Structure formats: structure tokens, C-alpha cells
Amino acid sequence: MGTCETQSLGVLLLLSWAITIQARSSLYVTYKDPSQPVNIRVKELYKLMTLEEKIGQMTQIERTVATPQVLQDYFIGSILSGGGSAPAPNATAQAWIDMVTNFQKASLSTRLGIPMIYGIDAVHGNNNAYGATVFPHNIGLGATRDPYLVKRIGAATALETRATGIPYAFAPCIAVCRDPRWGRCYESYSEDHSVVQAMTDSVLGLQGDIPGDYPRNFPYVAGKNNVAACAKHYVGDGGTQKGINENNTIIDYEGLLSIHMPPFVDSIAKGVASVMVSYSSWNGKKMHANRHLIIGYLKEKLGFKGFVISDWQGIDRITYPPGENYTYSVQASINAGLDMVMVPYNYTGFFSAVKSLVNANVIPMKRIRDAVKRILRVKFIMGLFENPLPDPSLANQLGSQEHRDLAREAVRKSLVLLKNGKPGSQPLLPLQKNAPKILVAGTHADNLGFQCGGWTINWQGSSGQTTAGTTILQGIKSTVDPSTQVVFSENPDADFVRSQGFSYAIVVVGEAPYAETFGDNLNLTIPAPGPSIIQTVCGAVKCVVVLISGRPLVVEPYVPAMDALVAAWLPGSEGQGVADVLFGNFGFTGKLPRTWFKTVAQLPMNVGDTNYDPLFPFGFGLTT
Image (cartoon, rainbow, N blue to C red):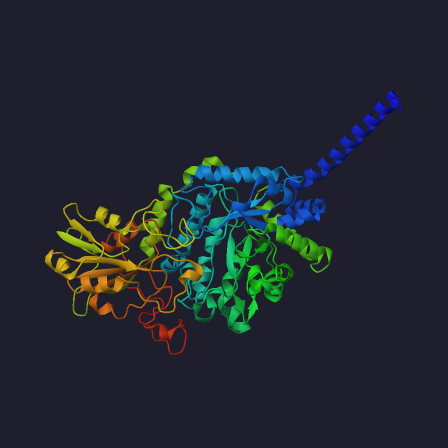
């Protein structure tokens, strides 16, 4: 071949390459053009994708197994932080931002440049991040009966989540907890679905208000100050037998639709971007494999247009033992309607299983098409293609004073006054600020980790000064008159209490932190030494007991000894809010979001039941 021929061939190859690039670029422009309708962008991008790229979009992996190479090789669509999974201990907002940015740059460098979406359990604030505002858990917010407050908390949580570079929150939990023995009952706003429905305004806070002319049941995320939300856990997670986590909810179809489904209907109407499926079963059928309820009801009957995501290793648990037949689990879950799978570690196994099942026509391509288009729809709607990288200017939103003030307001409104004064005696509350000498006692009075509960820094929560915040003791000290002597003794003896001349005592006791199955509890007693502290202190001096718990506990044996009793739930990082109300700066307004039983033998017992005989009924709450 001569030189001229070689040059001509080279020119032809160069022209051919340029034409190919130009053609590809013109196709790229369509899906990258924000002026195009979302459905056109989704359609055009989907047409360009290989099967491998489609499976990648359906895959969510934990940050600890995510590397730039993994993201590029498997076209991973989503990364998450599991409970307590952070880039470093006490990581700063900037450290989170740097981590997310590095992952995102790897995703953007793939052939089609589809951004990944990073998700996190921001369930009471951005609670994995050190220094974030920790809001009261949902049970306390249910006691406020204030949907606008919950919406504002959603907006603040969105900003604090975006402050760490994360655009997707696995919240809100809209379970209707029907049995307080369940370890996740504190994640539920109420036993009454109508209260939970009202609190789905959290979705509007997280994602933003939907414009009036917006398409019905479509996901909506207003912008880069908001996050994609996730209504969880679909459906019936709060109705399991004896409150056992991930167990079986035995209820007829009408009961499922009338008690557990309504909050999902409301969340979808408010534009929720995703729905997470429950580990639990309905009448023996695993929800992760329930095609009738996921495709038939959620997608077709309710018209949900966002994406459906599994829970952590949720598809593995379709079989027992979990993972026993992973290929079957993949087949059953995808064919049931799951769109994104929280793998979270075994991405190679998931990837190869989906690919082989598709190639064997066991999983039909129409199911892959539906899943991928739903995921892309959310990514386009939320502006992830236009703004894929974190905004460092939002870092100062993490733990801002404005958000801490909001959390303090939420604490005040969440407190439920159950008793105030013994029969024939004057009310003890509000407490006298200028008493000469007061006692503060109890395991939970000066323990920030205990008052925050589970899902705080760590999955299970922990004890001590785990993050930034104010303990109840610190709040008391800053509220009383400077002349008042505040004595703290966690577990004092009776002689000490009697001999010190205290005007009154504040006893703060309750549950240690827990999450999920670790919180399942069949006896619901106040953990030791709580009962003995109550009996010792309240037997010697006027006392108010502040109970820190994720649910009602057995208190009936101790109530006669108390002068006052306050249910403070799991108030979070702003303990000052408790002191605000104890000392009368604000009045008690909270109402019980769930029935307070006498004994566990009565459970499950919910408002409206026959033979309803509570210690304190649903909706009870004294005022001051």
C-alpha cells in the first residue's frame, strides 16, 4: 500500500471517527438538555444503554465497597451509607462532600455519564453526621400533632443532608405501629393512621412543595436544597405479630388497606420519589416478593411513578436462611416490581444473577425497562444531571443554630404531661426556678446519646456525648435562677435524698438506645436501675419523672409515688427544650400518639379496640 493510499485511509478513518463522535454527541444532547421533557430524556438515554448499564442503575452498594473502579466497571446507579457508615469518625461536612464528589466523578466518567445517587438514613435529622441537629424521633413528633412543624423539620433535614453532599434520604418512615413491643415503634408517628397521614407533610419538607399544575403521582424534588425522599416500609411493617421485627402481619386485605396503606397514598400524592419495601410478610407472603402489592397495587392501582427500592439485603431474606437461594431471590424480587436493590455488598453476585436471568428470559426486559426508566426519571426530575456534584456552600447548614432552635421547639411540643400532682395536692409543674436547692437524678439526665436514641451517629445509637448537643441536665442548669443549687446524682441513696433539703427532684430515666430487631421487647419494663431510682427519690422528696423512651413502658406500679410524670420520648440533641417546659417558659401541649397500656398482657391494644382499657388513652395529655 502506497503512502497516498495510507494517508487517504487515515483521513477516512478520522472522518468516520469524527462523524461517529458527532452522531453520538447529538444523541447525548437530547438527554443532557434540561429544556427537553423528562420523559423524552428518559426515553433517549434508555435507548443508548447496554444491558450492563441498565443493571448497574438498579444496583445500590455500600460506600465501604464502592471504589471509582467498581463504579466504572459496573455502572453503579446508587451508593448508600448504612447506619453509622461515615468517611471517618466524627467526619466534617467537608469530608462527606469530598467522599461523595470522588464517587460522583467516577460515575460521570463512564460512557454515558449517568450520575449515581447517594442515599442515607436521615431519619431524625442527618443523624449519621457528627454535629448535625438531631430532631426528636417520629413518635415524639406524632405527639405534637403539628404537620407544619414536621414539614419544617423535613426542610431542615434536607438542608443538613445536602450539607454533606447527599441528595437522597431514606425517610420518612410512615409505619403505623400497632404494637409497642416492636423495636422500630419510635420510628412511627402513631398507632392511628390519620396522624401518620397528616405527618406525611414531611415529604413536602424534604422534597419541596409541588407546583399546582404538576402531574399527579409523579416524583418531585424542587432543587438542590432539597432531597429525594423515601416512604417506608411498604406495607404493614408496623402490624407484625407481637411486634416482632421483620415478622408476619396477619390482617385481611381490607384491614391492610384501611390501616397501613393510607400514609402511602398520601405520600405518593405529595410527590414522594421512592418507596422502600418492608422486610415483613403479609399473611405469610414476603413483601419483597409480593407482585400483587408492588406492581398490582402500588404501581398500577395507585399510579406511583417513582422507583421502588429494597431494604438492606431485603431480597436475601425472601428465603430462609437469608441468601439460601440468591438467584431465586433476585428473580422473585425483580419480577415482583423492585426497581433498585440495596444489595449492599455482593454486587458481583447480583449483577451476574440479573444478567443471566434476563438472558434466559426469566426476568423479562419489560421489567428491566420499567425499573431503569423509573430510576432515571427521578434523577432527571431532581436535577442530578445538571447538578451532580455537592454544593460546598451548604456545609454551614449542618447543625446550624436555626435548625437547633427548630429542634428545641419540636422537643417542647412533643412532651406529654401524664400526671401533675397527687390527689388532693397542688400541681408540681411548672417547677419553681428559684428554689434554693434541687436534685437531678437518673441515668438519662446527663447522657446525650441516651436522649437521642437509635439511629444516631451509629445504627444502634450509643451512650455519652456522642455528638454536639445539650443534655437535659445542662438545660436545667441554664434555666434555673443563678442562686439555685443544682445537685446531680445519677443513683442516689435514700438517706442522701432525705438529708439534703431539696425543694424537689427531677428524675430522668428510660430505655437505652436500640434500633430494629435489637429493640424488640416483650416485657417493656423500665430498665434497671430506673425503677429503684424512682422509688428511692420519689419516696423521699417531691419529684417529677421524665421518661426517655421510644414507646410507652410499664409505669403503673410507680405512678402513685410520683408527683408528676412526663413522657419525653427520644428528644434528640436539644435537651434544653425539656427544661423550657418543665420550668414553665412554655406550656405542655403534647398528646399521646399511642395508647399507654397498663400491662403487656393487654397488647396489642389500640384506640377503637373493644375492651379498650388503657392507663392513659390515645390523645391524652394534660396542659399547663
